Image (cartoon, rainbow, N blue to C red):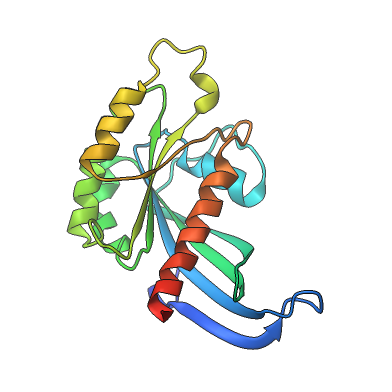
Length: 213
């Protein structure tokens, strides 16, 4: 389990400096650091998804996450006013139920939540109802300043599967919990992975823009 200083990771960095990205782009740099939690049942591929996004590699086999693990993804996003240097602090939560009692404390301070399920295992979508309860206990669920992303993993397995989840089943969950942002991803071939995290970053910038308006 990786350890990270809560006081540091919960600090919201919304700072504008007099630096410039380059002579070609004289916009000021704004640093945006956000806590993002990634949850879902064990085996749905959360850690593999994060390895694909952060390290650009497919890790076929990962160790079971104990408690929580930590990744950082950095990207530059240019908008009308700033060069936004975005740092996503990605908390990878263990999916096993025996670790779940501590997670309500870890979710505090998050500004984005990624709820993962396996596109060929309906039970993992149903289990997200329990994860919503964890988010409620942690005081994260239903907040206007927190963005929620529903993510179906292992899209590469769907075509040849007889147990693939239907769109109606996914829509039922999305509508019940009012989640608009849904992505299908494959860590194997990287489909949808960067679309997901680009949208997470864009949403975090939108949150900060709203604070400054």
